[in-house]
Image 1 (cartoon, rainbow, N blue to C red):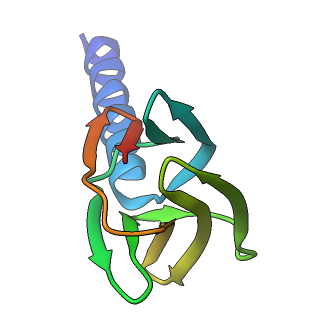
Image 2 (cartoon, helix red, strand yellow):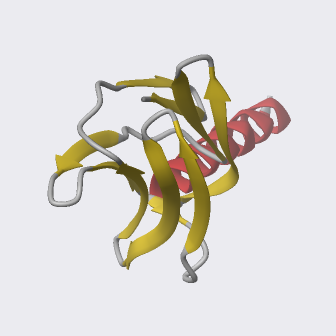
Length: 127
């Protein structure tokens, strides 16, 4: 009986520790894909964990800013020139280390409609 209790307690502590690690730890970017899809451009970000992304729009120059709270990336900004379907380039960089926030900036030639979808660890911004 005591052995069964011990195993139950260890399993419970293990699952609580895993849940706490996921909630307290920052997600990391595993992959960023930028591709043309017909008349659209799709930006897909794959993370090691789930987050709640948001998008802000900016003007002068026009751009979309995908904000990934609780996400870390390289401190050095990455730049992906595109010049297709209204998207000039995509930039990825760590905006804040504490708390961790990464931003994906989509440079546009003018204002364009967009959609944002999140499916588990995958986030897709379609312009």
